[in-house]
Amino acid sequence: MSEPVTLSVPVDVDAPAEDVWTYVTDWERQGEWMLGTRVQVTGGDGRGAGTTLRAVTGIGPFGVPDTMEVVEFRQGGPWRAAVRHTGRVIRGEGFFEVVELGPERSRFTFTELIDLPLGALGRLGWPLARPVLRAGFVASLRRMADRCAAEYRGRGGA
Figure 1 (cartoon, rainbow, N blue to C red):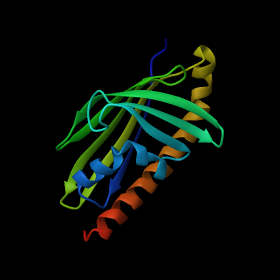
Figure 2: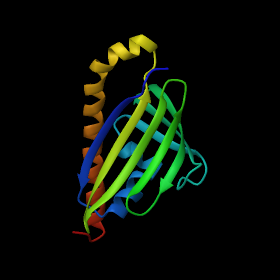
Figure 3: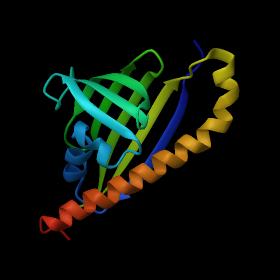
Figure 4: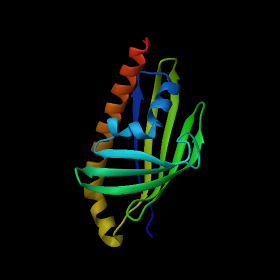
């Protein structure tokens, strides 16, 4: 097992931190904003530690399954969820963190600490894969920020 690689992407959102938290931890809605990903809750209540999830990322019938267990779910500033990736291909940890920047503005940070698959081949390919994955996460988080802010405004927010 090699050292995990880290990919962390922050995005500022024009919505209160609690609204952002509720939106990003509505696991099954992640397909609205995370490119090419579908998520379902497979166990637990979906709102706390012990929840299990299954995501599939890909296009059409071609996708990579990603099973996870929520191992931390802390509500209230700062808000934080941690998942353990338990699948055969994707292993490691993921973190969702939301901090308040003001009454109607917050920052969401998505971080992955992933154990690279395929040994030496995975380590060699990471420098090529990293910018592509980062670009996908940046686009996804921008989409999330836009949708979350629009929902907030639609409920009468700023």
